[in-house]
Image (cartoon, rainbow, N blue to C red):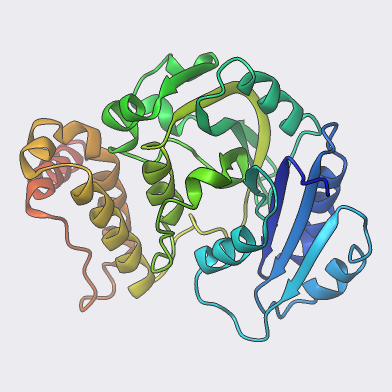
Length: 305
């Protein structure tokens, strides 16, 4: 029995308008050695009717519809990984899409160093509100030029220099990871926003990472995207997940010495506190080592007025 090279997991929740483009960009890949696992987390927008049209496609090995929402996207990841037969896993989020040479390009790059357990490419944002498309430069705050070119690096070095400070992979849909490696780690089922960051950190203890600078993944920004502003307890949950990860991969002294590398959290906290300011009983609290950076930011903002 032939086992596929890649298991493509498409987890969906209420992304009906984007499903056809997502599925067509997956099924039309120039590299065709894959299976597709479709998971719907009890959508209420008619998504399941769109998905059923692909049920008999020869590449679709599983189509599973939940009766009750799981409450966490990473529980859906776990379900898909358990069903997967491939050597590699691709979590192709249902509201994103990609170039048709996404798989073939990443695998051609992988052949130059088979120690890789994680591969990813540059991502472009598609803003559904403004209609604009632009290259994601999130990682460039760590190093202005590093992501201009493709590279392979050891997982240990990548974590030490970059990943422990922020999630360098801007969108999970732009990444592939080895099933053999993921079976050795604990999936972050309790997380809602930062589980992908936690997973990458764990995976990189089992091998190298490869990056392709060609943008082949498109992250769609819309009102329901996980990165868009959430209210009250959801934002508190997001920040608690940030802190859980940075505290796990650094010491208090590390965070003091490299305080500037965590400025993204401080800035995000500042912006969201301003928005949440009308809710006096809901606060976003920074760890004590980041409070100094926050106070300095507030002073700079006031002086600039």
